[in-house]
Amino acid sequence: MFYEGTLQNGVTAPEHLRKNVEFPWHAPDTPMFFYQNLGQEEISSSGTSFLNRKKVERINTPPLEAHGTVMAFQHGAGYSGLSFACMAKEITGGECGVLAIDARRHGKTVSTSDQPDEDLSIDVLVNDFVEVIQTVYPDPQASPSLIPVGHRMGGSIYKIGGVVVLDVVEGSAIEALPHMNSLLNARPDGFDSVLEEAVEWHVNTKTIRNSTSARISIPAIISPSDSSSPKVPPFIWRTPLRSTAPYWQSWFAGLSNKFLAVRTARLLVLAGTDRLDKELVIGQMQGKFQMVVVPGTGHMLHEDGPTRQAEIMVDFWRRNERAVASIKRVGES
Image: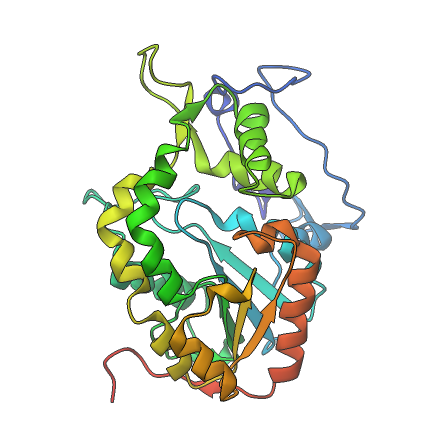
C-alpha cells in the first residue's frame, strides 16, 4: 500500500506464491482477501495517497486517551500473540488498548541478528518483552499504564496498572514437568495441512475448545517443512517444545512469590481451583490477590472462552485503573 507517497508493508510477486498452502484462492498466483472497512478515505498531506483512519484503528488498538491503559499480552510456550486475538476483539473498545507480541522463536518473530536466538531462558524472555515495551513507548512519562497479562514482569520503569496471570501456578507447573515428555509423545510430529488437520487436532483433543479461535491462532504456530523426506510431514511445529526443555524449570521457579510481591493489583485466572499451590492458597486467604475460576474451559482459557475472559479483564482494569504503581528496573534498589 502507498502511504505518504511511499510503498509500505508491500510484498513481492514471489511472496504471493505460498507452497503447500491449501486454500481455494480465486487466482492462485494472486492471493487476496476481502476486509469490510466502512471508514472514510482522506487525501494525505502528500496529495498522492489516501489515509483511512478506521483502517489504522483496526490494525492498531491503542487506548482512546493518550495516558490510558494498554494490556500487554505474552503468550505461552509454543503459541503466538494470535492466541489472544478473539479476546482482544472483545476488549478493544477504545478505552483500553491491546498489545500482543510473538516471543523469539515463536509465531512470526524472526531474528535480525547473526547470533543464534535459541536461548529461551526467563531472563532473556523478560528482557525481550521489556525492550519491545520500551521501543513502542520510548517515553515512560508519556506512556499509558500497562497491565502485563500472562507474563511475570520482573521489572520496568513504566507505570504498571496491574498484573494478570492466566492459568499458571508454580507448584502445579513444576509438579507436571516430569510428565511433559509423555505429553509431548502424544503430539503428532506435524500435519498434512494447516487449515484442516492442524486445527482439527487441536479442537478434537480439546487443547483448544473454540474452533473459531483455533482457526485464527494455529496457522501462526505451524511452519512448512523444508525437508524432502517422505517421513517428515509437510507442516511442522514452529517451536518444537522438546527444544525448550532446558528452560522449563526457570520459567516457573519462584513464580508464586514474585506474583505476590508485585506492588500493584494482582489477578489470577484459573480453569480450576485444584491448580493452586500452598503459597497462593495462603496469599488468597489473606486477600493479596483477586482470583477468578472460569469453569468449562481448559488450559487455553483465553481461547476457550474469550468473551468471558475479556469481561474479567475489563472488570479488573476498571476496578484498579486508579491504583497505578511505579515499578523500578530489575536490580535497582
